[in-house]
Length: 111
Image (cartoon, rainbow, N blue to C red; front, top):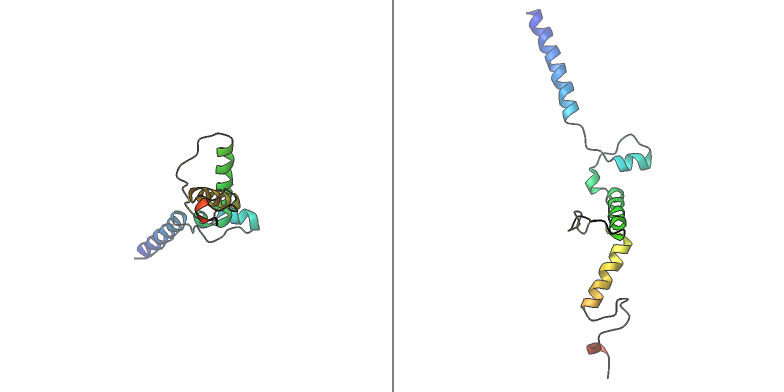
């Protein structure tokens, strides 16, 4: 009987250790490095700093002529200022405005 109790306790402890090792809490390495904390309790794919760092890396690769993944895997999440300006300019040109958004299309100018 005593052997069963000891064996059950040992197996329970081993199962608990294995469970903790397999199911570790999600943590963001980017935030942990930036804040000097050992861990941050959120997923890095939803971290603004991490996503913007990957966006900058993607823009750098694009500027150097390297192939980048299209469409952007993060979609509209945490856009950089450069990306916002680029998208605004594209929308302005599509609507007939100048790229800087200051000159209206001919249909809107008074005659």
